Amino acid sequence: MSRLLLAIALGLLAPAAAEAQRAATPADFLGITRCEGGAAVTSLRHDVRDSMLVAEIEAHESVHREQAAMHESCEAFLASLTSARRIIDAELPAYCAQWKIVVARGADSALTRREFAWRIAAQSGAMENRLQVTQRLEQECR
Image (cartoon, rainbow, N blue to C red; front, side):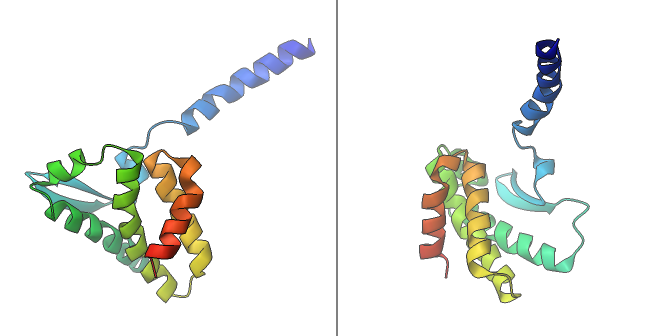
């Protein structure tokens, strides 16, 4: 009987665990830069209203617009993001721009760097690289 209860309990928990592993969607991000007609366009989620948060997101997404502008088209920029390394290379300067704003407001520099490094590692699908991402963020973002 206890094995049956354990099996039922695990069965009930499994869907929640599986859902936690789903792929990210645009709604998961406070702001997102996408391609429209070859140009990079940023939009914020409709529920983002705090001006301090908007400034952080805008600093982050501005870097992505600049990165896209360095390519033949926005679509070419997106097409270049073919590996965890390239995603990390694109996200690191964007999070650095955001980090500068947050730290200027008084946030803990090291703690914020670590949090952002974990986000970068997760977005790239390379959580096993989070220590290296943290080290890069410390070296490249001052």
